[in-house]
Length: 210
Image (cartoon, rainbow, N blue to C red):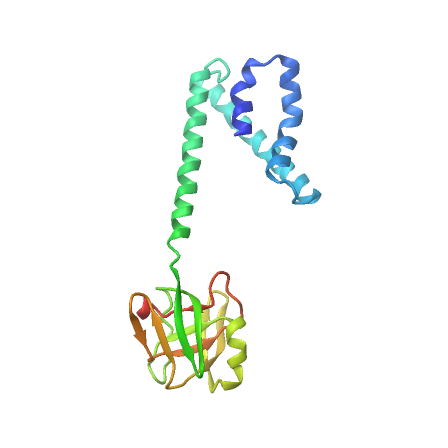
């Protein structure tokens, strides 16, 4: 908003004021937006801001030469252009927010051996991990919760990840229970123990439970 306001008012200020704006605008905007992030991050952000500004300015100048339009004199056209950019930004941010809201995280109750736990679970439709021996679906428990069950693991299971293939310890028992969703309940599943902690949840459910 600060940058947009400066851009709109720029053609109407005296020449000496334009010089001051040229000098302080980038450092001021970066200081306001990046307060408390450190001097190295600040300097880097100023350089990026200045580089992008010069690139956009060069593009605008080229468009002006090609079309014969003076964006300073054609103020209405400049405002419309800024408006289109602003609306595009809002639409992009709304789309990102919508994608974040689609992450389905809910509380579930799970019994692991003799422990009854209430965990935050990710309802992941992409988790189709199935044990090749028992043909049971496999849920994945975070390291933070699962590390205390490691000594009860009977074998490993191969898991394909973005980084490649990993082997996770596998818990297998007849007294596992899982309550999920709106009245969903099952005991037909196995538990793989993750080697990492998850952010915002401790259990990844199998797609068949979603």
